[in-house]
Length: 306
Image (tube, rainbow, N blue to C red):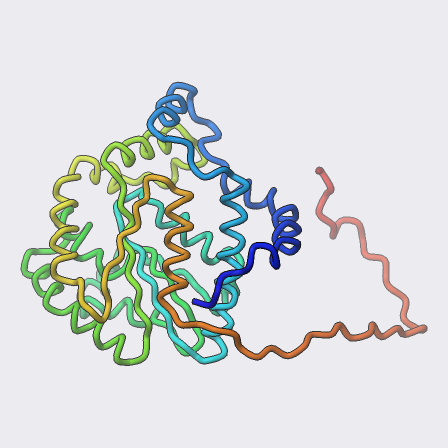
């Protein structure tokens, strides 16, 4: 990671950006808009005050400016980066992925969140459906869940046999070593939350119409099988935490701190630096005295209701 921005040097830019984007970021940060007051009180009681909103946004914008430098470095040097995000349901994986990609070029940084495998995919080599999504040179791929589904949800929910799970544990270290040998920089994060925090977040989703879509029957079953998921997680760490691709655990009970800590840590895993940039100059507009702009029919326009 390059040296972080000097707070004083970047103050003018940071304050201007903060003022310009606060509304957009605040919209992303809106929490529990339709919660009952009772659940809101319980949640606030269970959580000490987090980072002040203005401080959080300043830190986030500074880290996002570094992510842009990382993106430029990856693109310029044709690097290949894979970041895996795993963890229990509602642990905050999607939130940090959203903040990482928020200001990046989607042609460089893309998110992969695969659905349940089809019948055809179930008959393939287990890793086969993930391989097409691996990065080419100059790309960053963020896996919102990954091949570790096999040692997690598939194992706990009975979608994979013990023989298949054992085969996975035997294969995944070498599979990841192959990725690293091929030039891929592989970083693996596990988002960790407490039993009580997951329960609270599920209750919030149940009572929030904007978040109910996030709940699935699998999510509800994960509450019932909390201890089974814990055992599966512990064995996954024990058998797949290899020097070439170690696991990093992000404590996720405080969403804001989890996002900042994860992004800062990710930036330190990759030795990016400055790359040459061509100076950008806006060309002069060409005016044609004989050109007359046509008046378009009003029905083509979106009604201005707001």
